[in-house]
Every structure is written in structure tokens, then in C-alpha cells.
Amino acid sequence: PHCQVLPGDRIISANGVRGVVQIQEECSKVGVLCLAMQGRRVDAPLFRVSFGVGPGGSAVGGEAPPMRGPVLHNFAQHSCCGLHDMEASADEEFDMRASAGEACRAVAIEIVVSPASPACSADPSAVLPERPE
Image (cartoon, rainbow, N blue to C red; front, side, top):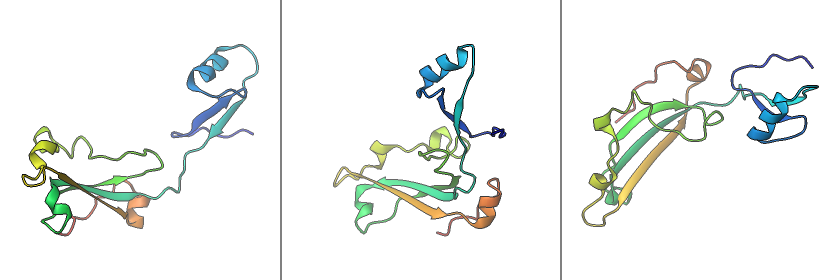
């Protein structure tokens, strides 16, 4: 069928072969080319993700580590999430050694993932409200 290829769509196979190198070889050949495509998920939910790093004792009843974010993320597009470059300046990077607790020499990593509001899902550029303290 004749379908428009959209950003985020990907080629699964070419003439029945899979793999990036094999697909590139098939596409460079002369003749009929049959592509199997996978469309991006349009309905994938967006999530608000915040990160915190602090002394290991904070994981067991101590003070919670300071949080950074939230960032809006779509796990269907990228399985890994992090702070965006503009969110994390060089002096704001997580320093695991400095975050380790003196007593137990451990680091607590706190990650908060919550569903984004429907307004954010409709407009990913929507500004997120401040995280309550």
C-alpha cells in the first residue's frame, strides 16, 4: 500500500533481510525493493521524570536527596531518560563520590516518574508546573 513515511518510522527489513548492514546492501541493489516499515507510536504516553542523588543513608529514612527536573519524556521513543543539556550545566552534574555518605559510603539515587498531564501529552513543548517541595 501507498503510505506516507513519517519522522520516527523505521525500516524493519528490506526484501526479507534484517540488520542495518544487510538492509543497506539490499537498498543499494538494482531491482525491486520491498521494505517492511514500523510506524512510530503516536499514542505513547509522556512522563514527568525527576532525578536526585544523595548520601546512601537518605534511602533509609534520612533526608531525601535534592531533586533535579522534571523533564518530559517519551519512553516509546527513547528507552533511556536523562536531564536535557540545557537542564544540567557543568557545575550541576551529579558527583557520585561527593554524594556518598561518610558512614556507609553509599549513594542513594531517587527517580520519580509520574504521568504527564493530558495537556502535556498533546503539546510536548508545554511548560511543566514546578515540583512541590
